[in-house]
Amino acid sequence: MPHLTLFYAPHTCALATRIALNEAGADYQLQYVDFSQNAQRSGEYLALNPLGRVPALRLEDGSTVLTETVALLAYVAQRFPDAHLAPTDPVQFARMQGFHSYLASTVHVAHAHGRRGARWSDDPAAITSMQDKVAANMAECCALIEAHWLDRGPWVLGETFSVADAYLFTIAGWLHGDGVEIAHFPRLADHYQRMQLRPAVRAALHD
Image (cartoon, rainbow, N blue to C red; front, side):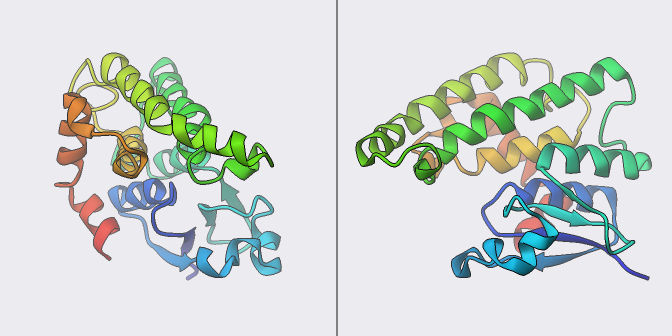
């Protein structure tokens, strides 16, 4: 029987979906996309995912492909409801998706300015300026997360673990490279350490 197939590359936000699949106990296989060989821009991969990025999740029918972390996390949570990875209450689900959207549209973009400034400018001075702002911008994002999302309990949604925690853990793993000391944000640092103890996370990091 065909498996779910997760197309991924190390050190990318694909880790969040991989953790979610592990938490759900899903039967899936991994397909490595070699960024060092520009495989994400190959004709074969672009036919699968025209965005030329990871993650992408091919479903068991072999033809349906879902993309974008926000969508994939919601899909995994709803596909495997017994794992209780997302709220069933519409308001709480919307709050989770609001957090996901913030990570995708603001935090991830701030991080990307340090490595992919050419997406936004061809001016070397402008790219350098963007790179110089990464640490400050990411620290500002961390302060908001610390104050407004990790203030109600050990997890993003309070007392209940969700796929939002997998997403936050993934992005928190980029902070050192962005010049941000996670210890300056005690709740975030505690969350990051607690996540590393979960079997699903350990498997995603070490498989």
